[in-house]
Amino acid sequence: MPSDFCEELLPFVAVAKDQDETDLLAGYREIFSIPMDTVYLDGNSLGLLGSPSRRMIDEVVDSWGKIAVNGWTEGEQPWFTMAEKLGDAMATLVGCPSGTVIATGSTTANLHQLLATLYNPASSLKAILTDATGFPSDIYAMRSFAKLVGLTDSQIILLEPDASGFLSEERIIEAIRSQAVQLVVLPSVVYTTGQLLDMEHLTREAHKLGACIGFDCAHSVGIIPHQLDDWGVDFAFWCGYKYLNGGPGATAGLY
Image (cartoon, rainbow, N blue to C red):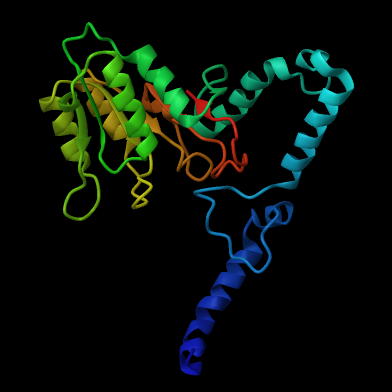
């Protein structure tokens, strides 16, 4: 690398170091196991292992060994109520009241459950709207559910991004209006571009048109503020292994 280029970068390096030193979250870096000689920028795919997670896993395994079936209702962390306890902890991250979030299943399984619970086959509005560039497993789940309730392929509306590569929120609203959409499933953050959708605005407009709307928050929970309850969002789901650092196979969240 040319030396003059390196010199040009020095002011930016100084600013970065200064921000690191004053970052209120800087101390948390020490609790994570960071691969050697790595600047880890893949938290959107798998969060790093934190020392509290390792300790708690060891505690659960130890409890299993010591008290076996009694671990469901005894010990420091009874397993029977763990889904609700973890759900309440996650509820604070998405701006929802206690008792409305549960830690359960996987992202795809939870989407299946939400579709089966909220979709009304008797409604005059039939279509399900999502984005064409959404996470593939979400689209698979919607197509699978559509077959169960007798929807045609044309009633699963896949909205394409515009020429800029981003989703147009006005086009989303227009599609809800013109395509007899009953249920909308969108990402909070479009994982291919990093676009953050205005969930509050989209929810308000969807409700004006009689549609039920929810969001896949897998790429936003843990890194941006959410106020799902105040915004009137009908449902949401997310995984636990990305920015929540739950590890591979971690239990997902459902609101």
